[in-house]
Length: 171
Image 1 (tube, rainbow, N blue to C red):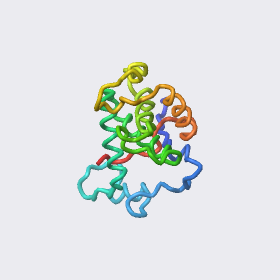
Image 2 (cartoon, rainbow, N blue to C red):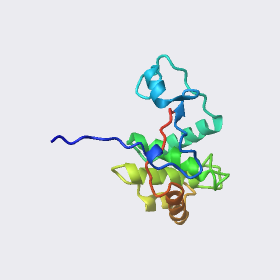
Image 3 (tube, rainbow, N blue to C red):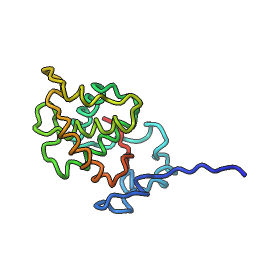
C-alpha cells in the first residue's frame, strides 16, 4: 500500500477564537476553490489579478519586520510571515507595536525573534541582542527579560501553535 500525503490547512484546522470559522473567502467573496477554478487562486502567478490593497500601517510593519529579519540574518521564508502573524495577534494587547526603534514597546522585535527561533536553523543569540547598545541598531534597547514575558504571551495569543495561519502577499 502507498502512503498518502495530506496537507493540513492550519488556519482552518486551528482557527482563532475571535475569527469566524468560515472566514476563508478570498478575491471579493469568492471561496478559495472558486477562485482557483476561475484562475485567481493561490497557486497561480500574478498575471490576471490585481494586488489587494494593504493598509499603510501594515506595510510599514512589514518593512520593520523585514529589516529586523535582515538584522538577524533570517533565511527561512516563513519567518517573516510568522512574525507578521504574531504581531497581528499582539496588536490586541500593545498599542505601540509599530516602529520599533522609536517605540517604547519591543513587542514587534519580540515577534521577529520568536519567529526566527522557531523557523531558522541558526538561532539568534539572545544574550548578544540583550548586550547590543550600538546607536542606530533597532535592537539597541531590546531586553531579554521583556522578551521572555512577551514570548509566553505570544505563545498564548497564538493558541500554542506558532505556525502562521494565513500567508500574505508582501508589499
